[in-house]
Length: 274
Length: 274
Image (cartoon, rainbow over all chains, first blue to last red; front, side, top):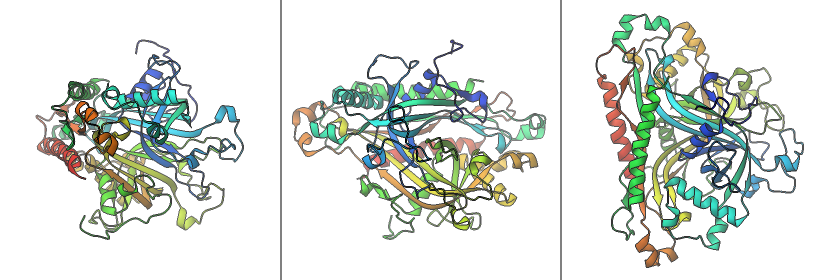
């Protein structure tokens, strides 16, 4: 990161990293990249039921992008697009707009949409130290806050569906039977999330033990310390029973190769950083 | 699963799987196993601030177990133990107990503790179909609802810390510098979550395309369908700069081997099931 003041999300009390503050970062590039390289996001929101104290959590797929500026880079302001089903009752699309917890009407223009918290985490390694307390993980995680509305414009929806499909395997969309039928368009829910603040936390490097333990040679000669790198591995693609295409297409084989090389490289890189 | 009525969590409206109901399951064994084999859980809860509509999400480590019945199997009732920091302000440990969203006092004996929603997801494969709409993931995911209180009993805390450490790498605890010092005990927060309901969703098998697309031979000859299995891979353990132990200990090397063999096996198994 060469830019001393990279384009960033605002620091508000709710997204300011409280613990291990030095690991916190707010810049668009870091946060957007974490989202766009995580296969699954965890999305949390409150349900309208006043008797239910538990937020909902749904695993969903998503990506950061801009429909109005489709070639925007990750270091620019972007929206989050999500695919996964949230019922219209939960979306609270009534004319009442949204209420905050005090039951007051929010300004409809500003606050319209379902408040969501989105989490994405990459596990990069198991960090083994002299003591259990000093054990840790190497990881990259991002938390986003935003307001979600369903995408109703068909052009935007189609664009988002293509980007989502290609976020799983690059170039997959055009290799399938597209465009979607009208029924498929109607049965697919895409949400656009206006992200209002976000943060990322990253831990990389070796274990850090405290001075007293590091001064205890008996312990140091007995306890192995270091990092076990971890990443998501892709195995050999297996054709379905009904598959009629001979052999695995090159773009899929390339995705598997690059995914595995890149995963290993990122995890080994994470072992080395301070 | 041979038992037609396995020990299970209750089905309440808030944990009943709504979409693809056939994938929903409520039995202890399935849910507890998912939790105990996931390196990271996502934990969501509401903050006391009435102006903040966004739930918090924290990635945390955890395991299912019973302090009073430590040899209980996964198919029995268990508590969830979590490690990770939630501030005491958020834990709302005041004598006010907990309030539901209407601001009413909950019965302190029944409801004491911070309401948490916990999510754990294993990604088992990318399911590639003839159309983007029919694309999916093979996965195993669990959602739990419960009430969290900090573990104050030192014996229970120590037991949980050992179980947590060993949930990352089996046998690691006894290989480190233990027991923890008083300061380490005090600075470690362990939460016990009384789980009140839970559910799991599992998708396994091949892609499922609709009849019309399966009848279109032009599409079928062009579009490769099948599954790319995925799992968490462990790389070669790397000793820290300050590590004084020669070579990687066998229990760590064994963990890496078994983790990789088991990960690949589970993902390939998930490709085959219906």
